[in-house]
Image (cartoon, rainbow, N blue to C red; front, side, top):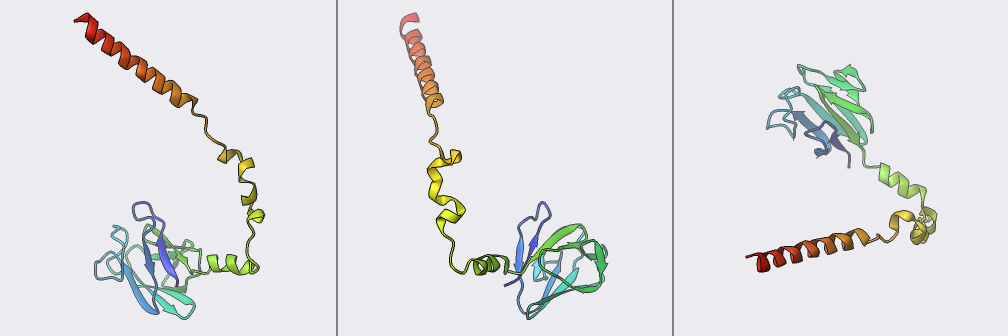
Length: 155
């Protein structure tokens, strides 16, 4: 199922799964996808899903609707291109990128193909050295003993 993903900081990762028909996008709460960003108009645009096609239709927004920096009033939106509403950037994830990877490996992926069979040889998976932890523990214990000796014999 296709979805819109916000790329702009502060709203990054916010998503809206598109359903067949019209999805309204804007700053106002009554939109299907509300993006409370100042440069997004109250009712900024419509995203129309017809089968596998996604159409963007600007609703006379103040700051405009752009696809790859080209201002549009109505245009098809393809997966991976940048959709900008005012200063807010989004992208369309058509949900097929993972499916394409799976289909290209119909026979399955063997662990050796991705290097998982040789994990122990990978230096990133090497057992950590605990010497620093031991030094810190020993130093802390020494400080505690010195404080106890001071408290017992100096008073």
